[in-house]
Length: 132
Image 1 (cartoon, rainbow, N blue to C red):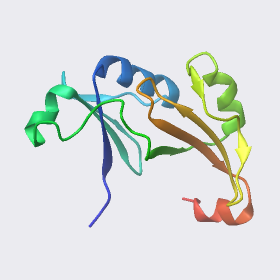
Image 2: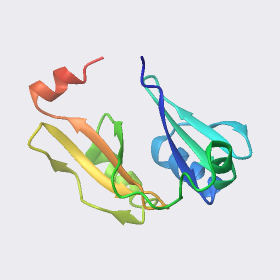
Image 3: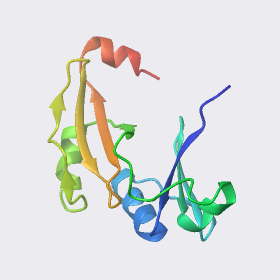
């Protein structure tokens, strides 16, 4: 088994894809007008419109209704990125903060309210864990 992606359902796919393209610098690959993917070397953020939900099961997913998952991206310098994101992100949860497990983390919400974590390992243990 291999973890491949996480999919977010949204009521405004163009807005959400555009947001993630801006904050990550990753160009989305569109499958059709209702589905796009932001692919990185180690995972994919898939974004589907609400029109895709009935294909799984009617009512099985609701946009802008997540308060449990955090979408995480490893970045080179979270402090520098924070300065760049101030003009794009409207809802910061915190400023860059060093966490007890050794990552410097910046949390914010995307336009649908999903929590996003951009983090940079800063301790030797965390740096080793995420070395590639």
